[in-house]
Amino acid sequence: MTMEFNDRQTIYLQIVDYVEDHILEDAWKQEERIPSVRELAVDLQVNPNTVMRAYEQLQQRGIIQNRRGVGHFIASDAVERIRSMRKEYFVGHELPRIFRQLSLMNIGFDELSERYQQFNKELKSRNNISGNEKE
Image (cartoon, rainbow, N blue to C red; front, side):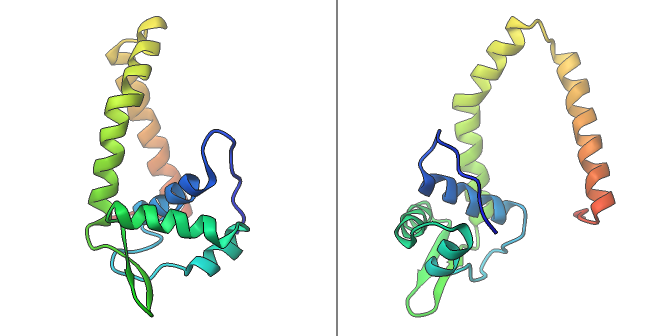
């Protein structure tokens, strides 16, 4: 698997997001081992030092734990931690920008709610079609 990196964010932080996304999508389960630094570096075609830096960041956030001689494992409360941190960032940084744009474009709550419901309906439909429905 190769990953397309963007220029807006450092690579190690993009790897942090990549790992967190895998956890949130339930592709990597809590308390299970994740790929080693070398394995992920090969998969993503990056320097192992870059992956190590990402793993150190994830350890500092309490998302993963290093078990000496065994590898890195996802913390039992990783999903809650990731959601909490992302929600805090989103509400504090992204949402004000979104609200400003909505105001400038004169998009009201009713229209936004309608579009959000449609988005969720389409997402649910896609998940059912691909067999990825979560119950």
